[in-house]
Image (cartoon, rainbow, N blue to C red; front, side, top):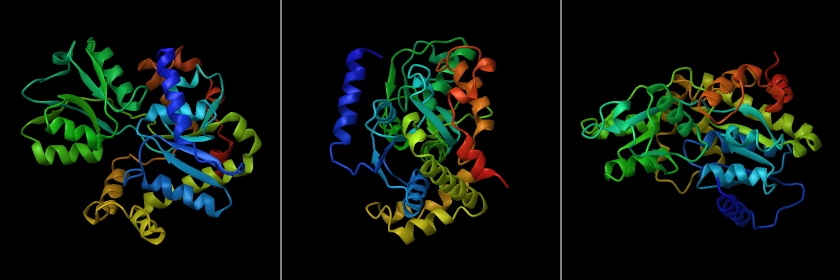
Length: 319
């Protein structure tokens, strides 16, 4: 990334946090707008706030903006896929708990592409630079012996569906829910291509190392609330809709969208999308993101402690 691009990201992050907050308030940078898909994360933060962790969540339209906000110190906590910048930031941030896995599907317009080989030199659209979708694309391109042409970025699978339907893009990667929606609406026009198996971490809760060191009690509470809610979700996906109604969240969304909350989380849990993880996730992440080119060095030689602070997760999951 050029210096000008980095400077632009820093300006955008600064603008997002222009409203003053208490010195005790931990700023949270969320890599996409709060929606049904990220509702569980917002609920976990609300629960942590009730336990005394003062947080303020700010959503970004681009994932890299959220990561840069934490790297630059504008925020203390983030949710995104930070691996692509972690080695360059020299320990500035540490992962705390995996929240979602990369359950994504490569999608192409049938009339234009039939296989990965057809995509050699062709444009491809991802969620964001350094995102899990780009990692999947990098891995598949490497395995298939191809190189993409122009790389484009459109945040949000729902927005990429619109671009596909309008003919603006012809190849991308979508999440589970939106893949099903697209194929139900236009299965005659679009098809999936083979993807990666054993999905790695997608959205990860991470934080600045200096903030972790000064607030270990708060970090324990924060991780505990995420792990607890994720456990509850595994047993009863409807808990997310129950909590949404109880807290009056997503009031601005149409009822036809919020009515699908339980169905969305039921499918997500069944397909392994919402699966918390710590040290177990780290090792598979190293293999995946090294192959994707977002981590350098031998995956087997990477040290978990250089990327993760696992004490809160281990404590939260201790039986």
